[in-house]
Length: 263
Image 1 (tube, one colour):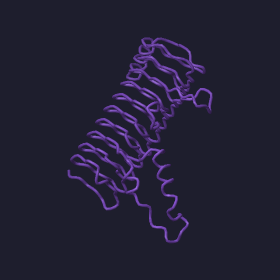
Image 2 (cartoon, helix red, strand yellow):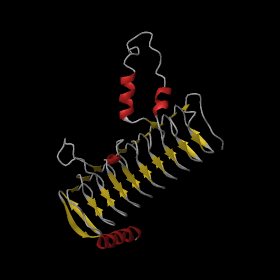
Image 3 (cartoon, one colour):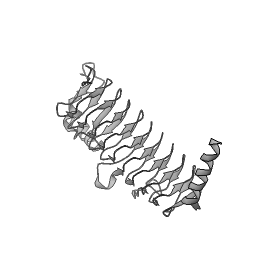
Image 4 (cartoon, helix red, strand yellow):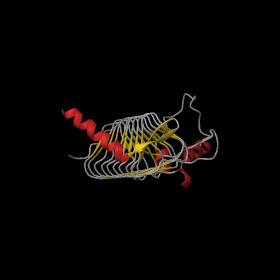
C-alpha cells in the first residue's frame, strides 16, 4: 500500500508523513503536522487547525484586505492558515474518520481510532489504543491551564463532551452522551476540570460537575449527576450521585448476569 493523495487535498510542505498514508479526499493537513505509518485520514478531515487566538490575529492583520462582498474577492488562500499552524501529531496505525477536526499541538498516540465529526482541540494529548466516538468534542485552550490529558486504552462513546482542564487515566470507559463540565456557577471565570482515575466507568447520559474526581476502579451509573468526589472502588448513582455498592459487588452482579445469558 502506497501513499494516496488526491488533487483535492491540501498537504503542507512542512508536514511529515509516514509510509502507507491514505487520504480519502478533501483533506487539509496544516503546519508541521506529523502523521505516522499506516494511517487512514477520512473524507474532509482537517489536521493542525490553528487556535482561536491565532485566527483572531489573522483577522486583525487582514482588515485592509478586500471584503468577502467584493465581486473581485479571490478564493481564500489556505496557505495563510498553514503559515500560522504548528501542526498536530498522529501516531502509527490510526484511523481518523471523516470530518474530524484536530487542532494544532494536539498529540495522538498509536492505534487511535475516531468516529465521524469528532473535534479535538489544541494541546489535547491522547494515549495509545484509545477510541473516540462520533460527535465527541474534546475541548481545550491554548493556555497551560486549559489542557486535557487522556490515557491509554480509553473508550469514549458517541456524543461525549470533555471539558478543560481534565485528566483521564488509563482503561477508562465513558458511555454515550456523557458531559464533563468545568464551571460550577456558570457563566464564571473559575474553571475546574474533571479527574477520572484509572479503570473508571461512566454510564450513559451522566453529568459530572466541575472539579469532581472519580477514584480508580469506580463506576457512575447511567443518568447520574456527580456533584462530589467518588472514592476508589465504589459504584455511585442518582441525582446527586451517592455510593450504592462496592465495585466488587457490581462485578459479582455482572458475572451473574453474563452467566444467565448463556443458559
